[in-house]
Image (cartoon, rainbow, N blue to C red; front, side, top):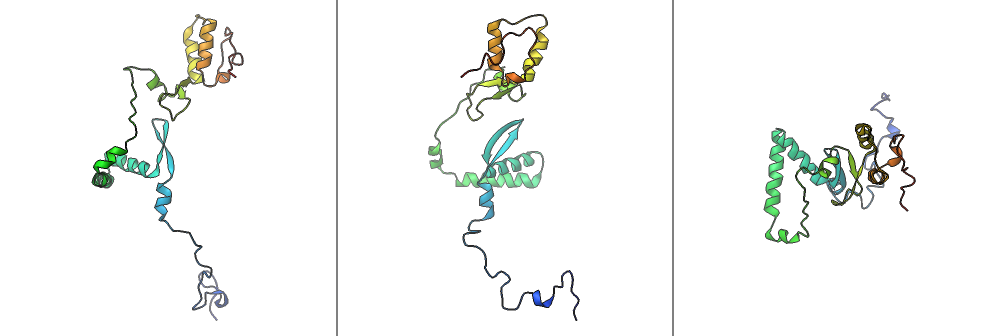
Length: 187
């Protein structure tokens, strides 16, 4: 009599010769495309200096390989250079005609708006539009109050500050503050 246990199932339950272990087989329509196409076709969020950007997974992979190559990983550098050479070889003169628009973003030297978002002092209302308005974070408004000293803001200045804050209900407004968040709500 044979020993029954791990790796030795009873002979009555073993696969029989000439009969498939998977009688129903693989379902139709499954694995019709390579698995990497399913993964690389998805969009992922990539963070750069705290700012998120949605790109395709294959682009994110190339960015990651390029970054590792620049950090000194020789294999990653060779892989990135091979991908660049392959892209150059497949690119034709006609591919330049596919450009639909050029986006110019003018930045004034020393402009404040370009610094607020990376420093997490403000948030863009619509992160997909480069011209979207920024709203100040509550903590930066509170910090500004502490720097005012004895100076008080006029009612008009208070309304301007209130409109510029992302979550005015989270701000600890000073005792002298007159304009409340509910008064400034827009319909």
